[in-house]
Length: 407
Image: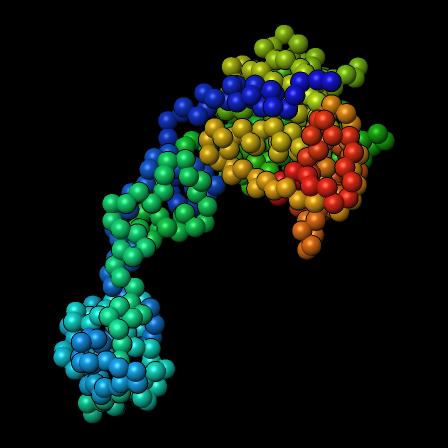
């Protein structure tokens, strides 16, 4: 039936394991999205760095209210307003300072009363302030509407562990801590080489028997989305010498070589012919689509040969390569995996992991999109999930639970 997907993933992991040992690099925050942190990140300061107001209101000393009871109020002298970003003067006894959201709490204050609870329910204007404005406020408990210094993050705490993937929230945290750069695991540089005499460049007229090359765009986009550096090259012929020359050129600057096409059992399989004497093994996986595969090294650089049909090469990335990179490097993030009921019955070949394109419905069921064919790029574009039917399953009824990967 072919090599199991689990065994083949282990082979990819062994091939790529040395890439996880490379020296970290330092990246500015704006270029670290999607990468994995190389070392634990300790907070250089607390968040918030000072006590501040959670609301627009009046900063007060709760002790000024004396004995508090339901409905108790007190009149305060209005002190100088405190905008966000200002260093406030200490609050005097019997004073209430107008304070804006995020502004630093003045010394002597331990609570904030929202402005809408004041009498009158507004801030005094400049004229009123110059006339020694007064305000009546309801009693406040200590800490009311106050964000305490360090209540989110305490200085010295490890806030992100080594291996954490740097998404928008993680980069926002680093920026809030005053950082401009972070140490990350060195990102992969992947060369994607599309092969085949049938490939035409986008924008050029199609000759009889030709198709447009979508694999380069498809895989490079998938890699970029995953935080991986990638560039596409096409060899629009079945000439093994032409492919060997491109592979040798790409190997000088890439950490991983990925070809699409030329790995099956046809008479003009250029990738197989070009690498007949290389340290590359061509195998057939127990998987549909994406059965034909190649693995090894070319010019000392790890090499993977994906099938040429666009859905097959994309499934090879999603099901074979992406999970290994997530495990080894912490980036990209692994796809969320769920058990969900099928909206449709499913047939699957015996002894093969079948990977079907699907959409998640509002009712929590997953509907198949298109058939199992490896050429159905329109169905792939309409999908937001993958359904994986295991090797020992040949039929599943509507309503049966199945493994689903969310895209």
